[in-house]
Length: 223
Length: 62
Image (cartoon, rainbow over all chains, first blue to last red; front, side, top):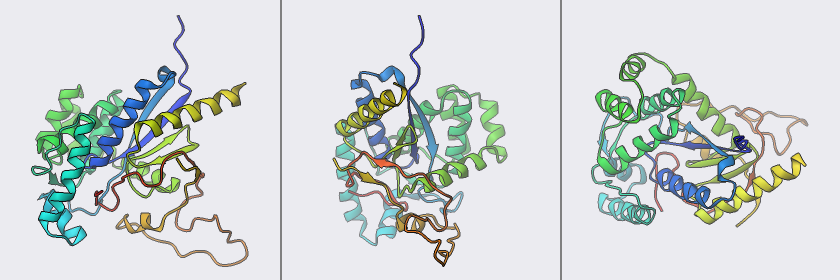
């Protein structure tokens, strides 16, 4: 029996500390589950640091960071993020942003690239999103990254070696440059077959419609 | 659903601290779709709603 060819390539830019990225991921997965050509879809995850200037090693509660960035009291930030958590819950996700800690995400992204080299990029990104958004994990802590990576199957010795050096930093930067070249203004950002773009946590119905459009156009082009 | 072209957004540059911003080139060769400061970029057909929630510049709100 032959394996269906992967005619739909989805490239996704995301940050592991991005609440809309996790919601968008779930909505896209819902759309793919409903898509009649789901077996032709392949997904590639890419790095996008929302705050690359965040000092490495600096850790601060997300609420404090957000309050400073938007110039609003923490109580107001808490109210805004509560609505995000409620929308996450609709998608079956449990957020605990009270415990979330802002960090520089470069090492988490380097870990995702290492995992991708083992065919585990999607699983690693999912684990890091859940760790930061739902479990209060510190996703720049080397011990935490080793543990989370090992959970999804990345060899611990390779993670330690990667964290001790600079591996994949250039890959993270290249991902970022590519997103900018596409005109991305934020994440999540989705590109289908390098021709169709969707920005943000779109509804599952919108993702499904986009998949069908891209698939129909691909079929037309190969006829 | 709206269909249009994703255009470069100056907010992107605002949200990419530390990256140099080039001056727009002068002269008759400068066309509207030129994208100063970035590589020649393919344009994407936008298949999404323009008001979907995104995180930009480290800020994620409704």
